[in-house]
Structures are given as C-alpha cells and as structure tokens.
Length: 484
Image (cartoon, rainbow, N blue to C red; front, side, top):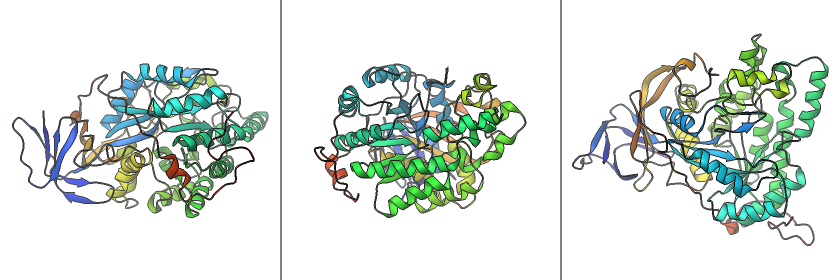
C-alpha cells in the first residue's frame, strides 16, 4: 500500500524544505510539494513535524556471548526497541569464537538475526591472524557484503589483537577495499592496572573506571591511527569517549588522514560520578568499556560533533540484566561490560543536542544517519529522504514529550541508564522499508520484518590514492597486501 506523508518539513543532512514524501512499496517514489495521493494510499499527517531518514546505529551487540553471559536483547527485541526510538537499521558485530572461522561465525549470526524486525548488517571481528583469516576476509567482503572489520585492542587474553596482527589485518583491509574499526584501549596496560586496583582492595564497579583511564584510550587511538597510516587504510574508532582520543582523531583528520570517530550517547550525557553511587547495582549497571568519563570530557565530544571531527553518535547497545551484572559482585573484572541505549539514542540526542542549540536539526540527521551511511558505503540507499532511497523514515514530532523509564521500555533489561531523563522530541511514526513499524505508541513491526543489507567494498584504488601520507612498505612486502 502506498503511503503519503503530507505537510511535514523534510530534513536531510545538508538541507531542509517543506515537502510531502510519497512511498511506493519499499522505496521513496517522490519528494515534493502538494503531491497527489495514489488510489488507496494511506496518508500520514506530518503537520508540525519533521520527516527525516531513519536512524542507523552502527554499534550494537544483540544476543552477544560475552564474559560468561549472553546479552539480554536479541535481534527481535533489540530492533523493535530501536524502531520505537526512530532507528531503522543496526550494524551488529559478528565475533568468531576462539578458533572458529569467520564463515562459520557469519552463519551463526545470520541465524540469530532472522528474528530482526528492522534492517541490519554486520561488522566482522578479527581476533587473531593466520592464513585462514587472510583468505576468509576476502570471502567476507566479496560474498557476504561486509566492508568493515573490528579489532579489539583491549580484553587481553580474550579478544585482544597485538600490533603485528593489527598491521597485517589493516593492510589486508586496504587491499580488499574494506575499513578497519578499532576498540581503542591499551589492553596490556589495562590488565596491569586492574591488578593494581584490586591489590588496593577495590573490587567494586568503581574499580572498572580506575583501571581504564583516558590515557589508555588516547594512546591506543594514536597507535591505531599510525598503524593504519602505514598500511594505507582508513580507520574508524568506535566509542570515542575522551578528549585524548578525540584530539588524536582531530589531528589525523587535519593532516588529511581518513579517520572517523564515534562517540556514544551515554558518554555525551553520563559521567564518572555514576560509579560513586553507593548502590552496587546502580554502579554495575553502568559498567562498560570505555567507562563513563569525568564530565569535562563531554565538552570535547560535543565540540567534535559540532565541528565535524567526530561524525557519528552510536550506542554500543549491549544489554545485560542486573542479575547478569552480579556475576562480578566480588570482582569488577567479571562484571559483563555493556549498557542499553537503542531505544533512547535519538530522543536523548535531540533533547540534549538540538533543543540546547548544540546541534542543528540537519547535524542531528548527519550524526544519527547520513554520515554513517556514507562511511559504510550505503548512501543514498540509506540515510537520505530522496527519490529512490529505501523508505526508512521517521516522522519526528519536536513537541512530543517523554520521560525515560525502564518500566515502559521494550528492552529486556530491568533498568535504564537514562532513567528519569525528560525528552522533548520523539517519533510520531517510524517507517521501515515503507511499512509503518511504529505509530502513536503502537508497535506494528513483527519478528522477521528486517532484512540483511549488504555493503559494497570501497575501491582499493581510491583508498591507495587518497590523501593519506604514503608509507614505505617493508622490503619484500607489497603495500596493502601483507600475507600471513
């Protein structure tokens, strides 16, 4: 059934204008003034509202096995929660088990994701280096449509990769037209600091923050940028949480390097005082890596979004219940890392960003949708309100008020780190590929409505000929084509 969204103001990342939007099937058929409704079309009155591209959250962990537990939100309920908040696509992380092939891990994640109610894609994790990994990376890019590879510089003894593995994988990415992502924390230093904190008798959640100071993130960000530069690869730094990391990204970009930074909505609003709470459960629910920082770091993150040195606001949605968090009751190292946010990212960012004047509504669209669509090579299929684009749309009511409460959320965890936060601005309706998925408080999306979205590789020639500083390859090794 065609859908006509009438009377709203269309907001893209680069302009706004009063226009109607006609949806035919799964795509946008037309954007213009005074469009006629086809016979049988459903009409949505968007008077007083903005019509924006649906949000894209590039950093989620749904049904993730991690630290002895599995995150509580699966692909069905995670994506349903996302739709209620205006997010129409998530990019999750496919993380092979130790010794498992990337191809087998991909099949595992595809089986889990069949329940998704909204569109989704994957990043593939590189957790070791071998001839098998080298070979499978090409299949992942060319056959499975994954153009990004995640590298953990933290979690020593589990997911962490060392510098030579980073170099080899980054170079392989450059050769394949893929982009490496990094979790930037110095895992060796974190491990030693964890031991030191425990030796001082600190075993509660506050120890988590003490053992992961901003310096370990800043150092790792700098190191990843330099290694990427030597291989000719671009770089995407996930959950950029502090001034030190942001400044490393800003310096690199000023020097012409293709480096992207992703702050989380949690780090933009919440700070390290959350760990001072005497209620163990309260503090443990907020344990994530990197941890919440001193409030002074937030000014740097907001400035990065305003100036363009940081490009994307994500969530790192990895929801563990209070009971799961209590696995680490006597040792903060065992507390499963992660919080929620999928449901609240866009209303919270609108309230804290647009309503305060920190962001324009066009910048809001950029950092929640358009920028990541361009970075991931799926623009303008996603991230745009334009004829021919997928009909992933949110009708945004800037006057709609909402106070966040765990009792009313769709997420399966029993708390919300934004509990009590009053938002002004929220979706009146969310459309996923032309279907009304959420409208006026009613969830219409169903399990399995989502589809897997392949992302084409970037041109390796484009990467090699970009504005990156030329690095000299070691003798006998081709730049961008390191073999195991």
